[in-house]
Image (cartoon, helix red, strand yellow):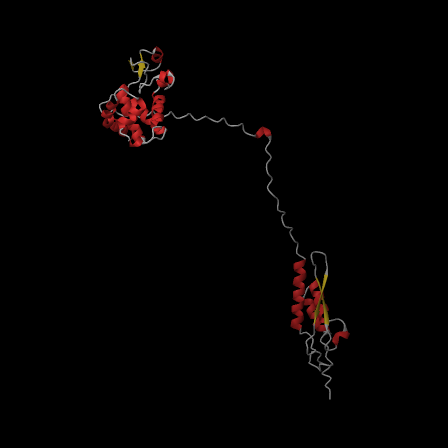
Length: 296
C-alpha cells in the first residue's frame, strides 16, 4: 500500500514518485526570499529551484539559466544542470550554492572595468638646426721634436769629427743592408784615403763651395774616399756628401765577385785602385773597433 504521506506536515518525506521538491512550500519560499536581496542572482536561484510544476517528474533535466555579461555585450549563457542519475532533485544546500555562484558571477561581471593604459613611445625630440652646437675646433697636436741622433763617443784614437764621419759610413751601410764585413772595409778605406775627414780639392775650386773639413791636392780627388769626378764617380756636389760617397764605394765593393773571401786590403784595392794597396790592412783593427762602437 502506498503511503500518501502526512498532509499535515508538508516537510515530511514522502514517496519519491509523489514528492516534488521543485515546488517549494510557501513558507520556505518566503523565508528564502527574505534572506536574500532581490538581485539577478536571487532571481536565478528561484529559477533553479523551479517554478514549472511539470518539471517535477524524476529523471528530467532541469534547466538553469545563468545570466552574465560576456565581453560587455550582455550575452546570456545557458548551463544545463543534469539531474541526479537516481532521479532525485537538488538539495536546498546545492540550490543555495548555485544561487551564490550566480550572484557572485553577476556581481563580478557588473564591476566597473578600468581600461588599460595605452602604451605610448617616448617622443624623440626634434633637433632644430639652430639648436645644434657649433663644430668644435680641432686643436692640432704639436709635433714632437725629433730626437737628436745619439753622438757616439770617439774610440780608437779618433776625434769627434772623425767619429761622426765614421758613424755616417756605418749608418749608410745599414740602410743598404750590407754585411758587417763590408762596413769594416769601408771605414778602413776612409781611414787610409782621408783620415776620416771630408776633403775638398785645391785643384777643383768648386768642391770648396760645399761643407768640408780639409783641402787636398791629389788631382781632383774629393770627399772621404778621395773619389775623382773625372773617372766617373759622380758630380762634385754629390761626392762632397759623406752618405753619397759611401753608397758609391759600397756599390762598387758588392759588385766584386767573392769579395767576402778576399783579405781587407785586397778588397779595398779592387775598388780604389791605389798606388799603395798594402796600406789598407793597417787600419783593420781600428776600423773593427769603430764599427762595433757605432752598432752597439
